Length: 301
Ligand code: ASP
Image (cartoon, rainbow, N blue to C red; front, side):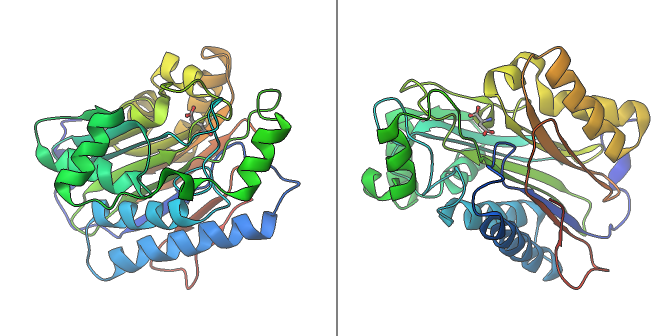
């Protein structure tokens, strides 16, 4: 299929969000449900008002970054040094425009910083201190890095349970707007107890995030190194191209992650017609989605 074919006519919008494949089922299930519901509603508000898929995924991911119960923005897991370093990426599928930030400290909404990087049109990925300086230059608010550390994550870090049992809860969103544009975004604090400077899949286009409006969009979560090994987000769209079935593409992509990538995780996906797919190899991945026919976001977990 040529890239532009899927965009000839107006589309019925759709949006899906996830709250990470490593969410702990024993802990705060209701809180996670409410979190993904509010995020889906925020993204949907943008689409329903005629807004763009990029605005919708940014809005949805910002809600989850601000929520202390998810591993992104405030509430991120801590590095081995007890600090927060976040990764995020965003992609718009018409022109394959994309932007990402990696190992950034002191930015509460890394997805917005990733969007600013995308908007430069010249750079795709900015890391570390350079990303933080770029935030200053482009008016993305900085914050005290300590303000992103929650009591819950600090207690985990102090107990040193993180190294033995990685806690994950990355967030992401994929949307299709009325103009037929697909966008995807992912944001994370990474893996608990990670080495400072470690960058995971969520900052890497094609691995944690991908969007092509002629095919669809994907946001991944799970073992970042395994996701990188199999270039999971882009591979999921290849499966979609072969089978033209969103649910199937999500499932076989997760199988690929487990079998070839030797890791665990999940992903959400929307195809160019607005069909959704989601799958995970872990016990729990909070997911919520919206279509015009639904009065409230549908929550699956
Ligand atoms: N994929 C993220 C990372 O490795 C973690 C996660 O999704 O929970 O940084």
